[in-house]
Image (cartoon, rainbow, N blue to C red):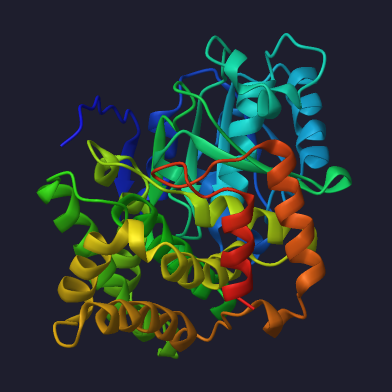
Length: 387
């Protein structure tokens, strides 16, 4: 196992009715900016619950944060926060709202002339003073409610960039499964996919005797395989299913399963290009790229792929090559069982996009994967396997 330092300062507040506790978690006298997305919180009653919980605080609202939060939108949020002298942020929504709020938190006191530098010159970010924030999660997927990372898009440049700051964790996150009861099927599909591939990016690399981390990861994967189809098929929400889904998403990317083990993240980085160029849902891009990537990289991932196949899917018979084929197929079949198509051609995407993406990575000199061997040429092969 590799050396590691683990710290996660986020206070997790879980369960039915816990939104009412928010006011106890925010400093007395704080000037709050409440952030949210397209307005679903007004329909499902979450807005009213949050406003009741922070009654007595000075509150400014900033809505309209998109899925794949847009840099241009967030600039307006930063301007409002600066003008209103906001000293606390409260994100009410899914991962996109929380990611956007993390950017605002980092940008309010940023001294540079261009806030885009927070994303493109991350080597200079360590000393940034961030504004504290809490979250109320309404869509399990990204794990952003218990980590310090975020992904921001910039439409005019067709860029989607991840960033992380060591002091940009939520101070608290409220997870009430009933807040997710009204989610549409598409968002649930994306959330299950995102959580599954988050775990795989940390698990499906190469062995380092991280036995505890492996078992944690396999447990989350098996939970998603068991409850994912049930969540999508039920005509009425089930509290326990949603509770386990929420915890799977949170613990899938709060740093716990990553301690002392190598990580990959190539699927996410390649997938971001598909979202930037074509607007595909993040979960969809993962479903397209991941099976093709593990197929292409089976040589480097061989030992963990065989372990994953045996422990998660019960694949124990056949030659090694046949078992690796079965692992790729089982993974793709699971994604498609959720109702998501897993090939570029299903979305009208072909060779032109593949050339654009490989050219981008070639120009950047990108080296992805746990061994740094996924370069532009390999990315091209992965994308063609995904056709």
